[in-house]
Amino acid sequence: MKNIFLILFASCFLTAAIGQVEKGSVLIKNGTVLTITKGNLDNTDVLVKDGKISQIGKNIAAPAGIKVIDATGLFVMPGIIDAHSHIGLDAINEGTNAITPEVWTADAINPFQISIYHALAGGTTTSHALHGSANTIGGQSQTIKHRYGTFDPEVMKMEGAPRTIKFALGENPTGHGRRDGLQPQSRMGVEFIIRQAFSEGKQYMEKWDTYNKNNLIKGFRGMPPAYSLRLETLADILKGKIIVHCHSYRADEINMVLKVFKEFGVKKLVFQHTNEGFKVAPEIAAAGAMASVFADWWQYKLEVYYSTAYNAAILVRNGVITSINSDSPDLIRHLYHEAGKTQKYGGLTDDEALSLITINPAKQLGIESRVGSLEVGKDGDFAIFKNHPLSIYGVPQYSIVDGIVRFDREKDPGDMRLLPDPKETIDVTFHDSDKYHDNCMQGVESLFGSDFNDRKN
Image (cartoon, rainbow, N blue to C red; front, side, top):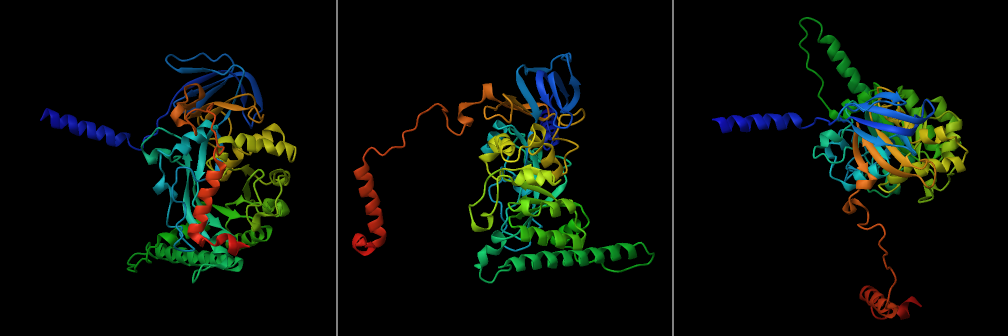
């Protein structure tokens, strides 16, 4: 009986632990603190208690038993935030329909994915696990904290983060006009899909509003409308409960979405990629929309051919809340370098450039009251750098999430790196070029026949 009691007790304890977020306490001493919103503070301490910043100032005494990090000569900034990422996910597109808001990336977060740790190694502590862009209206997405080391996907979710969803324009959802029998196949069709979906969501919402109103009347015996998670989600977009993140490249399509959203009263809109945003920056700002962009990544397909490395700076100067994102498990490791490019291309100040990877993406995800700047009461999320983070010589030393050190360069295990030994020299030369050529030709001949050399002439 005693053993059974112990087993039941242990089971209850473990069940309660699942989904619980670990919070830590740490004192960071004598760093150059880049608050983002309240200037820079030299030789300053930051105290985190139970995952929250409790004090910022000089000569803070360390509470008993608390971890202390000596940041003398180092730069302490808010943890970097990526508003467009797919790390933690393995399959990002539910491409079975042009409209799939009923799916949710949070149901497929993989807490063991090594790219999460690599992101921490680059100072990135929060990211937006986005659905892909195969659909005009894709799935709901999830803001995650990089709590690498947990086995529980629920712990990865940033508790209280607003709901988000992915929309997409252009070649991705149209399939370049080559998807037999599937709509849309044109840019016109993309607009129609959005209008039709919003109209259906509005009708669904009105039916439920009418039912709920009538249900308050004594004696009402009417049947409720048929439930649809798809239409419920579309209705929530119209109600302003979900932030839309819209894959976009061309200026004409950006204008189209601004028009459609205005007609349906949808105000929570963030354009993703936004390569031609510089052409319509005043219009984006006037609509209260935001933009998450690449620093200098374009020309990888025709619809993104016309862009500029000045895009982010032009958007900022026009009053658009702008962020630099990665959309890549590689770029997410050095977003601080990507932000630094805006100082060469556009002359942004240090605070403006750092805002592109901190407070601005926080605003785009609706989490600016929690992260994105170093202020008392906010989450204890930090990136600590040797050399200024906007310098080409900036190197992350620590990444801290909720007051817990999740990355420490001095204790970085060799088998967690992209290569086991970062100093190893890899020989990529072909020592026997004749043999390599012969092997290649054998492969060609197996595909095209032995008379390939004659026919190619």
